[in-house]
Image (cartoon, rainbow, N blue to C red; front, side, top):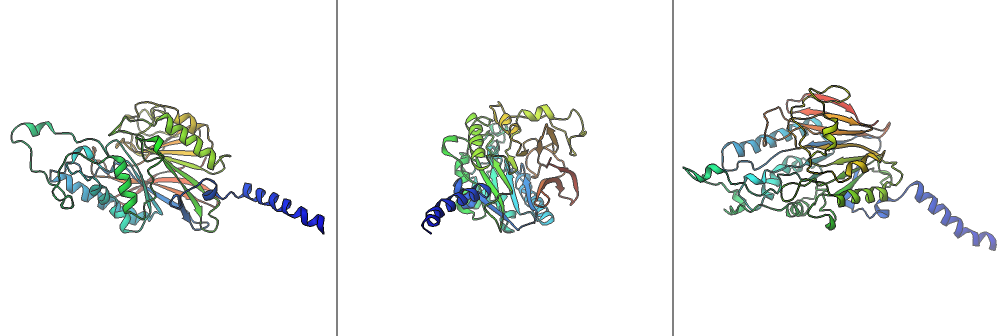
Length: 374
C-alpha cells in the first residue's frame, strides 16, 4: 500500500498535464480577459455582421450630412433584423472626424452603435483612417458668404472646438460606457495604434475549447500613418503562438485599410473566378508600407481570411494561395459612392466545421456566397 500511495501523486500529475495538453484552459493559460470570450450554443452557428465605412458626422453643418446618419442607422437596423447576427464588427471609418466640429466625437460613435446596442447584440470595433482625422477646413468657408452656422449636437453643450477626439479616447469611451462592447485598447507598447486584440469563440458547454480566434489590428491613418507596424506584426506572431501554438484553431483577421497583398490578387476587371463578389469599381488603396504582417499570416495554416473596408466600391473576396483576402461592403450612407448599401456576413459552423460568407443588402437580397474554410 505504501508503494501505491507514493506513486499516486506522480500519476495524478501526469494525468493532469496530459489533460491540459489535450484540453488547454485557454482563459487561464493565456490570461484572456472575460470580455475576450464569446460563447455560442453547442452545434449552433456563430454569425458575424461587418459594418464598414459608416462615416457618421460627415458634413455636420449641412442638411444632407445628418440625414445620411439617419439613413445609416436605418440600413444597419434592416440588416440586423434580416440576419440576426450573434456579433457585430465595426470595421473602421465609423466616423468622418475630419468633417465635424464637435470635440467629443463619441456622440457620433454612440449614434453609430445604437442599432446594435438597442438589440442587445455584442460588438467590437477597429479604427479606420477617418475616425480621428483632424478637422479639414473647407476652402469655401474663407470666401463669401463665409463660415456657415455650425450645428453642434445638443449633448455637446454648444462646444464646437474643432479639436476632435483621439482614437484612444474613443476606445476608452466605448469600453467604459457599453457593457456589450468586446473591444480593447490593446497593448500600450503598440501605441499610437490602439485597437489590437484577440477574441475567442467557444461553445457554452466547453469554453476551454475554442472554435475560432478573431484578431483585430489597427491599420492606422488619421492621427498617424496608414500602416500595420512591425511591432503589431510581432505582437500577432507572439500572441498567436501562445494561444494557438499548433494552428489547430481557425483564425480570422480584421482591419480597415487593405494591405498591399490586395493589390496582387485584385481582379483586372469585373469579379472573375476564383474571386467572388459583385463590385470591383475601386483601385485598391492600400496601406503606405508592408512591414511583415502578410508573411506571418501566410505562414499560419490556421489563418483563413482577412477582412477590410476602406474601398467603398469593392466587395470581393479573392484567394491568395490558401488565404482569402476579403472586402466588406460599404454599409453607411456617409462617404463617397452611391451604390446600394449592405454588409458582409460571416457564419462559423461547428459540425461539420465551416466558415461561410455572403453579402446581405439593404433591399434584403443575398449574393456573393463563398466558402472560406478551405
